[in-house]
Length: 294
Image (cartoon, rainbow, N blue to C red; front, side):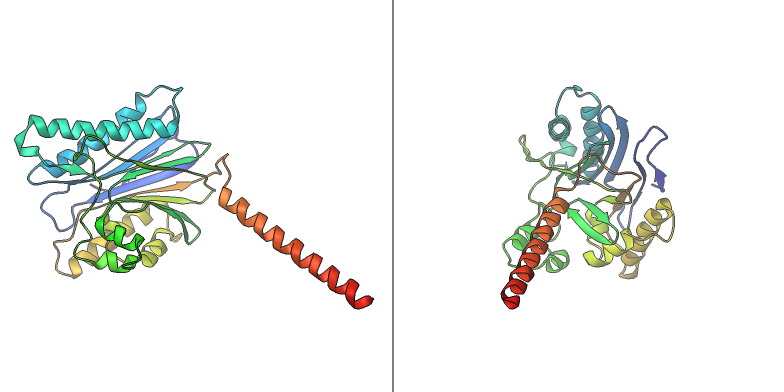
């Protein structure tokens, strides 16, 4: 799927582009979608899995049901609950589709969901597709993969780079379409003008060390659409350079054009700590001078 602009004039506080490529596989099992909703701008990226038509079917069902679930939600409901319910709706829709068609049994999908309004950004995920928040050239947030190797990272057994290079890196511990009850990780984040949110499948983030990935995602050399296309082209070329056969690759890149009403609590904590240090140093200097002068 070619580069697409995924926002309209009605979309507030952001611009956004997405691209999905088949990579070196016979079929692209990734899907993405977006919508302007009552609750804010919504974008989702999903990576399907399963033999035959299952993978693409699962990711398509996931995207369609997540968007529909948010659009049809009550305006009085809490946004985090709306997103969780939409993802769980997608989970059950995949399971039901598998029951109806034996060829689709066992299919599943990851899910990443980003909903942004003037107040905050809400990020949710299941599986090993990721969401990053980048400020300047630094990663300030990233989802944590639901995978076997990342459980080992959490335990301190291996590093994240070792996890990326592991032959078991594609073994996930959580996905849509597997069990009726799926746990969804969700966070509410503040954002600033210029921040970028990146939603991507493992075909993107697994292709290079994270430090390099952050660097290319934070490039300001061209317009956002060009940056999105450049990332896809670069990842595709990496795969072809090692013989092809590389994974499907999909990403959505969202750049904020304003600040959220919600402020970054981590920045507040940092400022409080800094102020405490300054006060301590001033008091120490005053005490020293009093002692020395006497």
